[in-house]
Image 1 (cartoon, protein in one colour):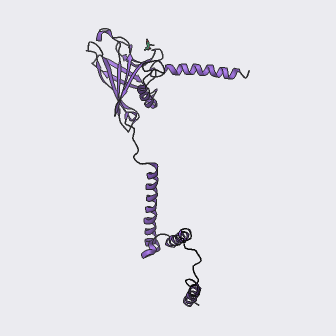
Image 2 (cartoon, helix red, strand yellow; image 1 turned 30 degrees about the vertical axis):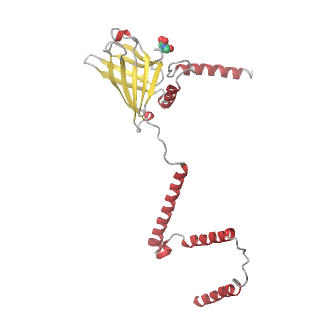
Image 3 (tube, helix red, strand yellow; image 1 turned 45 degrees about the vertical axis):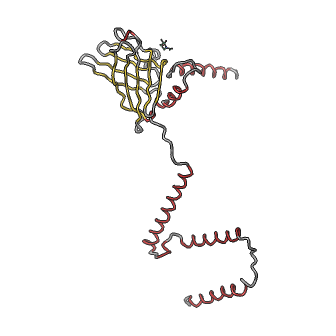
Length: 271
Ligand SMILES: *[C@@H]1O[C@H](CO)[C@@H](O)[C@H](O)[C@H]1NC(C)=O
């Protein structure tokens, strides 16, 4: 009973994997022998997978074609591996232009070209070869996908004809290298915060409190105290001279001076 669950699980997983395996762009070669470059480019377009695009091409008054392109998935499951299909409105006829199981892909600095080969064969053109769709994706950092359109249908060649499409996507853009390391970003942030603190504090002290001179500096007393503390700490840590300086230097004056100044201050206090 308990063993049945892992078994069922494995079977389901196998079924799901098979279904998913069919539903993807398959470059030339058996699994493991495919081009790493093509696989890397397909991975880069992963975000677009399954998206579908439509464009109507009005060739003449009586000729209208609707093209449907799907990124690395079948357009229709009843048209096996269909990646780009054409619908002829007048003839009410479907034609597969390219198939996802015959995917080719190349990329440059600001573009990626996806090709689906293995479409339905031409009847009277291009040496009756199989159709193919070429989809050029150009870099546009503002969109994941937009502007899908047909560029041309080339069928006047003796061979190697094609249907050419294009659209824009940020995925075709060069990967932006961050010129700033995390350290420098932190440093810049910190410096900006310090600047805001000083300028803001300065304005507050000057305009709201009405301070003048050095007192315009925000939290002046705190920072002076901190400076003194740091100096003391440094004194304690860094000086090599022993703390117990000969009595002649400290002694007599210090305490008396302190007391004296306090006494002097007392005179200033309002009675
Ligand atoms: C791709 O799929 C089509 C339709 O299922 C099939 O006829 C064709 O042989 C396949 N191509 C490859 C290279 O497997």
